[in-house]
Image 1: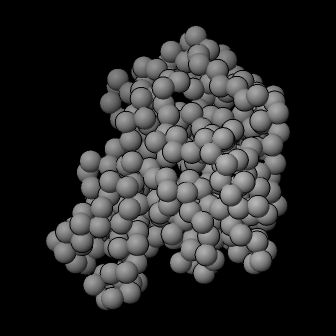
Image 2 (image 1 turned 90 degrees about the vertical axis):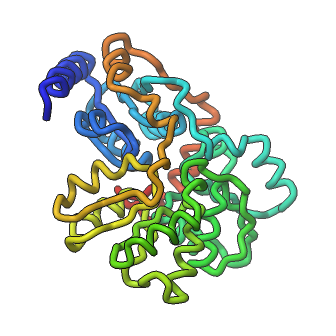
Image 3 (image 1 turned 90 degrees about the horizontal axis):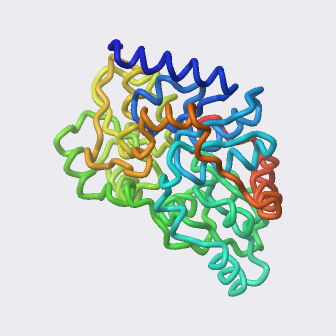
Length: 323
């Protein structure tokens, strides 16, 4: 690593120690922040790591709902985010009031909320899920109960296929994953017929990938629908060659570090989350120096939202690489 990174990282570590802070970085953060973090992973795994930490302060290098989830699971700790504007297009597709109205249209239905939601939305749900345990969560619910799944329609479609449950789906999407289109996928696969394919279930191309695999146009044995953490795990044992990756491009840093013998390339190079990239090395230093910006959750909302997360955990502990 270059000397500028080493000098910056040394200052980060000094300031973190002085504040007794633990630094958490999501898989889509810029490489410097991934490399300096105490814990790296998906939002729920990071929040669980924060709750288990002895640190007084959690610095969450991710987007706002992730910092909220850390606060839910570590209510006695101070949670900081380097930029309050780091939102999430998927989380913002649904509000708590909309969930209440939707539930009113379906009396007796159970609400399943993806963890990529605000604390206020989680508070209106019966149970949360990650992309890796959503199938298990849905399979655990009574077969005679109507299900409302929110907010990601592509993940919901994937869960429908895997479970056979005829769920009602909220029509939300992550703008980055929705932008990885079936046409992008088919063009890249046509150009790289021997490559493996890793597809995140939030992607707009997930249905196309599974259909093409079933039709024999993609090699079924080399087409994998995976959470970000599962991508990293699979990368460790990937064969030499090329892997095409359909998710936000920040994950490539980890994949390449996990297996330097394999070439990892994005299906769509423009799949970059501007919200994630609002968290910069300079802003992380500011947070550690000045103690900004604190994330809080109203106690009543936190109690109900925490119950939905704990209901998921009771079904079976989510994978540490679950999102």
